[in-house]
Length: 445
Image (cartoon, rainbow, N blue to C red; front, top):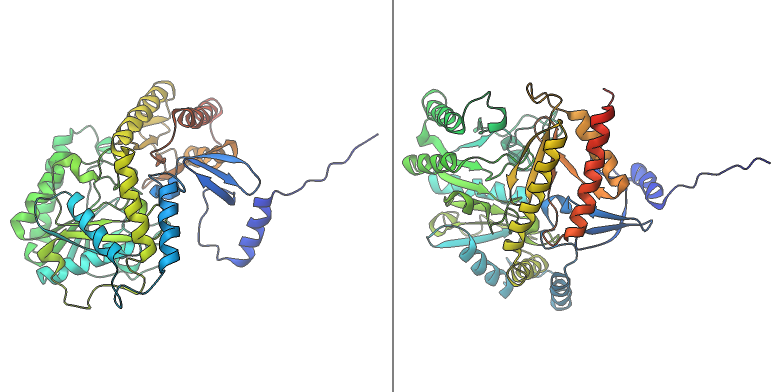
């Protein structure tokens, strides 16, 4: 007697079918799941399956999904008022948040803040502030850098696909310089790479744009989308020195690196360098949209009254969430926990590197770490297909990972800092299974 089995689509699959009919194809999905709830470092989908989250909403959930203190703060705020607009009636939480962040951002000088909605909006406003303060137009960014998807921030960003292709023309007076990618430096030492790049920057001032015409240099302390590339202290200090020499505003894009992500409250602390302006967002509100520009008071006051802001900028819900995030980081010692988590992750990843030839490099600061995958360690040919295979199959086994890098061959890790040892072990065991598969069988090209 034969039995027929009828396939029944999962709830996630049913919702994805509806999504494809109703929503533009442009927004990309790493996974094929629809979420029902998330707590700490665990996501549960609409079918009841659990996933260990190493993406953290792309660096948004440093304090963990739905932290009770954040949830309570947002509920309490929503019961009082949701949106009077700061430009109409001010509210205490905006000022309190500004005071606290001004005291936390590196730099021994008076600071002021402005709150906005997204990371890209923060970068746009930082550039506006720098241009207004200096009276100059040109802005320098770096290859491998990512600063957003709006016209100006897309112009500052350096990866063509998927961010820039077909979207030109781009904003004028934006220039890019090479960033120190030590793993791909053709045998040069870090000092040699730094020397060469600083020399090229100074040559740029002779050949391309006079330094007197440059308003700002914007740099990520760790390149995020670029593949978690970490510059040296020496390189960052050289950028600071050049900015001081020519009166250029140094902007640190801490949108992905801030709020204890790298084992410091802000990643610039690793370099002993203070930027003039700092942009932040992502984990600032634990998922409630809010961003900020914080910097030297005289620079922040350069725009005239009414020149900066926006209807939803620094919303009460965002400010309430951000204040709760700061409390959680302090009360739960998340800076120290971040350092510990980073050490555990790197130790495990370096052990995998010893076993699997595909892992060419392990790098990062704290638990903002990554592995670069290569087909051959000598030639360092990017293993793009293998990286895609691991990302596409990991979530089906219960762990969510992200890719990154100019060549799309980097696995990056942005886990909530509250991830337990057991969750880390389970997630990395899945990762190791996939490395084993890739090494044994390869991935068809």
